[in-house]
Image (tube, rainbow, N blue to C red; front, side, top):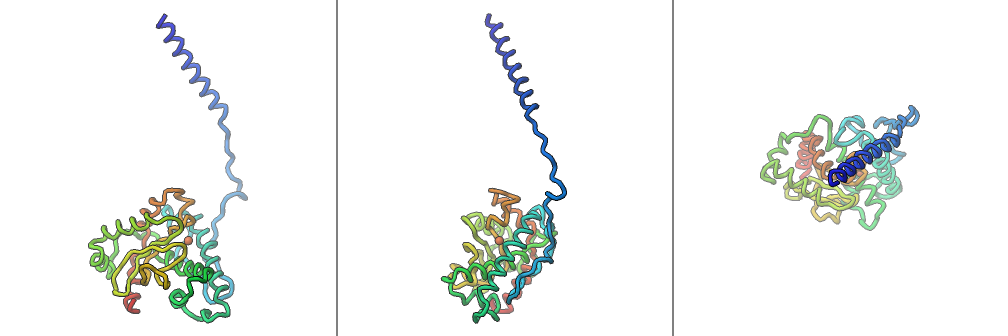
Length: 258
Ligand SMILES: [Fe+2]
């Protein structure tokens, strides 16, 4: 009897299994491939132009697919041709007809009234993104060389220490933010972060200084490729850091006495 019950149970389970599998098979729906018209088309960075004004977009020194997989082509295109272009146009509109119209972006950032939300966000967004594009390049990453390599060792002990400190700082940010490597007023390298589009050159900076490397932590910078995995984006950023450019930024900061 017991064997019969066990056999009946086993039979029922197998029947259910096949029944479920049959159901599963019948529920498979073939998803049609997008038509040529529906395919996402990626444009060209050189087609992006700001409206008439004091500032033009910083030329993107690589194509939209050059940083993949760290930054997906669609992410980079949207970021550069929509978000960054909007900041640039907003900055031009905000300074038109004001004493800022003929000033450098560094002067504008260091002088602006932080209660002027529009100028604060657009000027910060313009500067931060311009630095972010230059902070990355294809076929880069690795470890720094030249002057900056020695200074990182001097101020952080080692490149490994710097890397873990930068990752920890970026990972601890909540919401829309930036993490920077800066040169402070004593010529020391420091890691700092800002919220929204704020910048270490602004008068409200908790840790003021000249940024030489920038990491955009807004969701628009990574969400298409990483969704909630922001830490993976931060890790992957180290595969595309353009250390040659960061060294040039550092040497320029030294020439200008920070
Ligand atoms: Fe951004």
